[in-house]
View 1: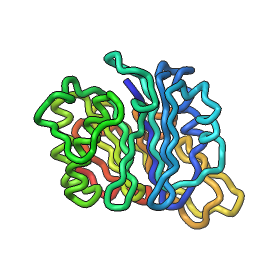
View 2 (view 1 turned 180 degrees about the vertical axis):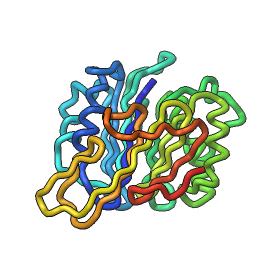
View 3 (view 1 turned 45 degrees about the vertical axis):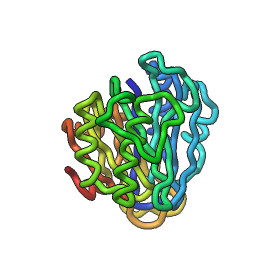
View 4 (view 1 turned 90 degrees about the horizontal axis):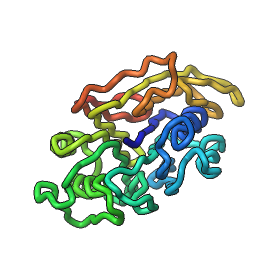
Length: 253
């Protein structure tokens, strides 16, 4: 399967060490070599970069791992292609659409066999560009997102439960403000709080390097596989929907 990594932070920060570990699993320490993508939010929009090649061999992926790009919300995905779906940009996560003036990004770990022809998962305005069942599921969720006027956890939970009944539904959705993580199998949460630091001082919390911010920092991390051995990553129970906002849990359904 693919792997996911996401971050919600109280103050803009940079993702360095954790994403570097994560990217190396894309064709180096892991076999997820069929593409990678990352969305780093800046206000209502995001820097979105995807490549249909191994993250471990990508100089662009390493730029994200080492460059001083700051964000409060980050979503990343490395792909292991299944069911003979081609390795192509159109099939590379995260997928993105605009809803109500906000950029919505989506990434998925799992499969939804037969969903493309299933009348129980109809599409409306949004249509897939690629061939994955993941993007079809995103377009299906977008119908509810548009009707709700944005990401609403209460609205989306029944639809995510329905997708889970159709296959394996590890899903992350974000609009740059809220980060929604829906667990099926192998989803983990890590929460950390960092006291105020001085300019130039660096703090490492659970493998993410922080620096260059003023005031206290709160960070929430989501990962398919815990990225560090010594941190208290919480396995999320199947069917759990966690909403992170400003680095803290805003809701758990």
